[in-house]
Image (cartoon, rainbow over all chains, first blue to last red; front, side):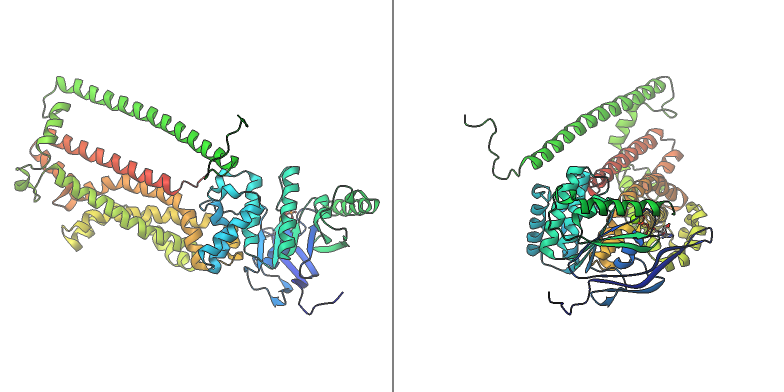
Amino acid sequence: MTRTAAPPAIELRGVSKHFRLESGEQVRAVDELSLTVPAGEFVCVLGPSGHGKSTILNLVAGFAEPSEGEILSAGKPVTGPGPDRGVVFQRDTLFLWRRVAENIAFGLRAKGLPKPERDEVVARYLRIIGMESYGRAWPKQLSGGMRRRVAIAAVFANEPEVLLMDEPFVGLDYARRATLHTVLLQLWERSRATVFFITHDVDEALALADRILVVVRGKIVMEERITQPRPRSVEDLGTAAVAELRTQILSLLELGAGSA
Amino acid sequence: MSTAFPRSRAGDVGPAASALQRERRRRALAATRAAAQTAGLAVAGVALIIGAWWLISLGTDPVRVPSPQLVFDTLRADWNNIPALSFIAFQSGGIKQALVYTTVNVVGGVAIGAAAGFVLGALLGRVRLARELLGPPLFVLGTVPILVLAPFLTIWFGTARIVQAGLVIAFALVTVAAVTQQATMDIGERYTDYAQSLGASPRIVLVSIVLPATLPPALGAVRVATAAGWSFATVAELLGGNKGTGKLIQSMQGLSATADIMAAVVALGITALVIDAAIRLIGTWVIRWQE
Ligand SMILES: Nc1ncnc2c1ncn2[C@@H]1O[C@H](COP(=O)(O)OP(=O)(O)OP(=O)(O)O)[C@@H](O)[C@H]1O
Ligand SMILES: [Mg+2]
């Protein structure tokens, strides 16, 4: 394996983020966390509720500044949000006043891509997410799962180098999730983007990730590489080793949850 | 027959789209039915009132309560010209000319005031400095009744149109600005964060997010401002004008021409209804994306 000289897609160096609550109490949402994510890696982040996962994502996205430490994206310090780091939020952020196609084209327009090329990209992504006939629909006419697909397509169409996803599939049924996993993996394989994916679902992480991180109290308490090829079938994930890993992660989550 | 399912025609984009079309047709049908029902009730209500009016007028002196028929005849006869008018007030023509004058003041005044109010509201909502600088004085101004403006406008501008339209402009500005500011602040960082992470510049954020997201409440405020605008415009004419429906009503009161007063009021009411319906129609189309 040859190591390229390219800088990692995401790098956190001793990053902390403190919040002061109304009670005057200080919360260490992220606690001296260091992390390196090489370009193209699919990282899944698990952790109990309220233990800093979204805060890490917001810092990398540039929506907030760290209290201490340094965050680099492709070797450059993060100073604010930018089109190199796409974000899929837990609650969808589709622009209700724009049709589906215009939602997908939003970033491309901001970039100044001419309309014929925009239309081409939009048509391609509509096909990938299986919604060819919905280009002219309004978001209000879509189901929850369709909205998620459009949100993902909108971010992918912008071709970010880094994709930050905060529990993007929460609240969807099993079949929709499976479809979206397939769509996500397809898009990821084509774009070779780096993915930082937050989830509460251990099985989702096991199915998707190159690497799983468990965050408790703002620190990474466990890190596990998964090497099985994708797509991973139920059998792939049924091995004793995976079961062992799952148990280990679940116990960490339970321990952490007890000390929120 | 080879198949029970007809092959899709060219331009037909599959089952999902046709479901969408069916849904749209179903909704259009339901909307038409609801509209017909509403219209029917409205007609019945109007008939009821005219009937009651007619009954009352039967036993009353026409100077006190003229009959619907008399008012309608007066409206037709005095539509284009009321000779007496040019002696008392300073305007010429009839009910139509007075109505046009007032309507232009209301519609034009609301348009100007609402546009300025929208910009001001968005500015106050988006820019902290503007909010902290202009917020407190605007709040104080907001507590002063708008009618207080009238004498000042008269002193500054005499009987020019701006005096009558001024109150309408001021009210539309204040109403739309307040609503737009609140709506702008309610957008939430979610949308702007998202847009920025897609590479949107501040200008794009303003045009593509702030504007459309605040449009629905702002349009509501425009309707309110227009409804109130009729009162402000006519009252301003009474206070210091020499034209318009308000002035006409005042002049006709001097002549005890009750039928003319009622004719003017009816004409004004119908105009207001039509304009409100137009705003609502435009509004429904503009915010057709809303859930
Ligand atoms: N803007 C903020 N102001 C104050 N405290 C905050 C803010 N954002 C997050 N926190 C605090 O930081 C801690 C971590 O929150 P965070 O949202 O990162 O958790 P999370 O791991 O994403 O949880 P969940 O799984 O429930 O989404 C929490 O204690 C939360 O109260
Ligand atoms: Mg979270």
